[in-house]
Length: 280
Ligand SMILES: C[S@@+](CC[C@H](N)C(=O)[O-])C[C@H]1O[C@@H](n2cnc3c(N)ncnc32)[C@H](O)[C@@H]1O
Image (cartoon, rainbow, N blue to C red; front, top):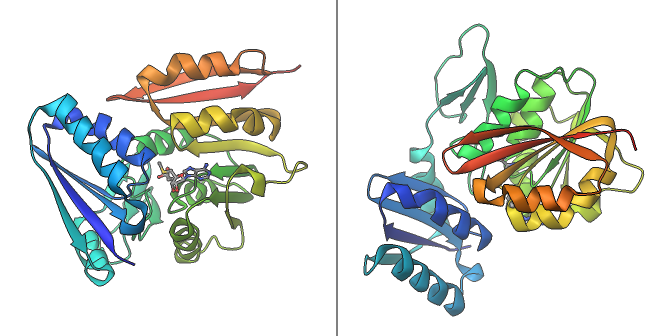
């Protein structure tokens, strides 16, 4: 499979906004520099109308700045991608690729994540927000749903915090394979089941103590009623992938559902909303 590398000459303050737009268009990996944003997409997912849309976006936000396209053969992709992935400490987690020799501190929980093409290196603020939110939770024996699992990083973290079982689903086949690989790398494959598809892969009778969903506003708004239906009594949802401008739309959507917003965490442009089930 071939990939397209798109380089945007773009000041840093516009990166988060563009990343949100690009994620909606199925772009995956992002590299951020002071004055440049680089994004990757499977070539077959990119067509002329995507290109036109990007041109309009760039024109609207950064005048006549430059956008460059480059084809990347798959073989080179992994090499160049791997070089950009460095270990990262996020709260009590050390997120690292297998090729890094960094050693964890005694009390750190290691998440070995080889991201390849899947989103979820821990570098993105939306992933970090969830990891920080769950690190202090008592997840012993809990059952977790990870909606839009990507690399599987959130499900793997939850299991390492004591969860008994996690189910992750993703509509992207590369993510499905990568989450599966990462479940073996972290030796949680007995407790982590990865499903290929959307919320319909979860049977009506399957209930969860904690649902983690780092996707994006439109998908979350669509699947929120299903997520709430799959919550145990006292269950909780962490929604991420939301910009602070999305908060009202999510609150409107929750209206008349048996839940309440119990916390909102903010970092840069992004928010995490923690939602708690309440007795009906
Ligand atoms: C922002 S990434 C999050 C990945 C990972 N959970 C993390 O926190 O780093 C969103 C993921 O959701 C997946 N996704 C997008 N729309 C989806 C949908 N309708 N159902 C399931 N997964 C979806 C994408 O393929 C992508 O892997």
